Length: 113
Image (tube, rainbow, N blue to C red):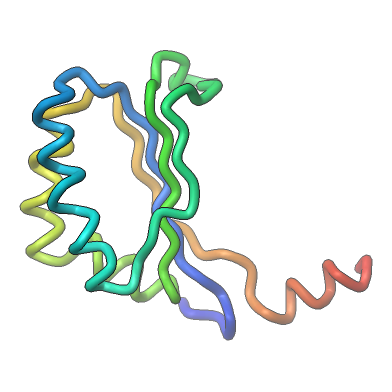
């Protein structure tokens, strides 16, 4: 975990079924995300869902400085409480935590290798 220069990512899709409750989640998760070093990298309210995500009306990618930071943020007591709001406001959710490319991989890719 935590290859040099590799960022961590949360990748989530879901179908929002309660806009009011989801708005409460967004109101609280935004400031918290900044506190833990994360930020929304991409968001789409009309994603082209494939392979069991066809009905999703939200896709979000959050970026963190490292895989460790992404994992610790997700496992934190604060986020576990916030996720209760997210889970109550959505259905058919997916949630993945992954590590991005490290610096060596980026360099090899840039060199066409």
